[in-house]
Image (tube, rainbow, N blue to C red):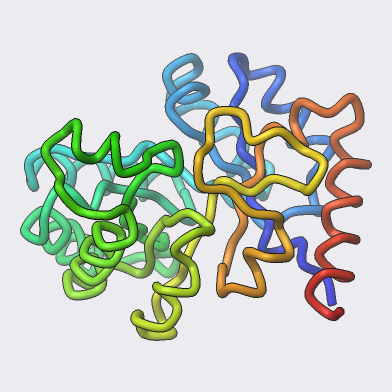
Length: 238
């Protein structure tokens, strides 16, 4: 089995050239390339168009969170860029999410992107939630927001490895789970708090794995990716 289609490489770099170098090296080896706030702020929509124009699938991870009309228009703009997957904060509420879903359903496109709701950031723990007035355990808050996203008609959620088993048991199978906080066993956690190895995340029910620094900060990104894919094969068939 080849797990490459489930790997999303996070292009968390500062420049167009760094991003395109990574895309060139990893083209055909992974499922999608993620463009987040760092690269999008530096290079704008053109970097999305350029990577899509190369025949690659792009996950636009800008975590939209605003009033319903603003988020809906932002998502429709992302659709015009040709992205395959995008995010908004489930914490923006059901009304916001339903507005986006309705607008997407009205768009005549054969390549409708997957719309994902971000639950609780992988860097956050209970103390961080209480600091912003949310008096709930992380798992409870993730569960609440994921169910809200499903009820609003989203295609899936973004959640840390720690909540995978919980969500897979409670959400319908149609709901995709995209999981950041993925670190090979020999990698540092960096600023992530709720992390997992790639194989453990897939066994727990992740549909896609977002992997950044273990690949893009490597002296040989292709070799690092191949080690991860090899570990996935061993770890999920053992």
